[in-house]
Length: 344
Image (cartoon, rainbow, N blue to C red; front, side, top):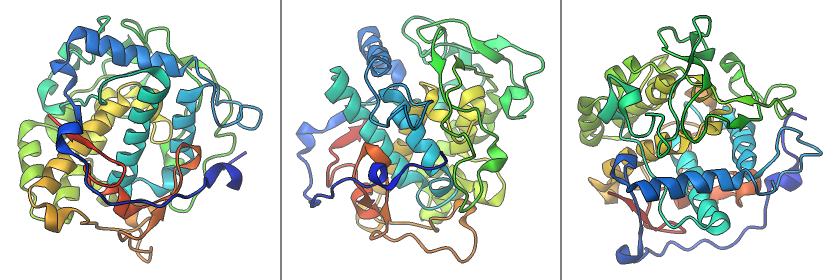
């Protein structure tokens, strides 16, 4: 079955309110390396908790969806061609991340905010990062070296390619995919058998050269100093021009499952990576909130093909079983509507 049925896509709409939250009550999202080991363990345990909770998407219709975490993976797969390389990349993933955070809190008792990964702190050696050093308080390390791997999607130069061998996720199974990234094209539904059950290990293929080029401290400064949303996206997500940016650089640096544009949320580092992307966007917006709060550039068509409908704040985007449809306006400010979070 290629796409979710209508009954799974549309939930009962409720009236949105734009009231700002109390800053003193806001959730604070922190960099992984700044967390106490007990806080890291709490986050890891919450991820593993989702693997023991039932999915909302029925596995009888979508065999690869086996648990609550897979609901997030399948939703990302379903919308891939509508939320990448276009104006929806940042707002859609902002809400996706928020729904993940709320699910961890509501269903698994997690008490913190979603951590983020500061890309610039490990641009030469990912295995030295507390996120990827393979210890019990990391999100596990590199995959075993496989000289034939080419990081799973032919980005040469990786140092792993095989199954993750250390840390809390060394025995972690992924259930969906893998996919060929070339199938991700405008207006194209998920590939045939996209939701089949295919259990296998989590694979990674570290290649920090991408971080050194696209995610270094200078790039972070340039993102914050961008004069408009077009300049910001040129650094964050210029793939519409066939060039890697900070968003793509983080995915490719981790490699393996993270290089799969469809099912990359299967890697536990996905949410931390998108936390950093959202943080940089929030910091840029905060530089001039009145003019940047609803700044958008592009269409809702993958690769921003000419002729696509321009995304405006009134554009409605979907989140499948995870939430009701939302206007983009509801996704543009971390301190308004349903949101109440900030970054440290």
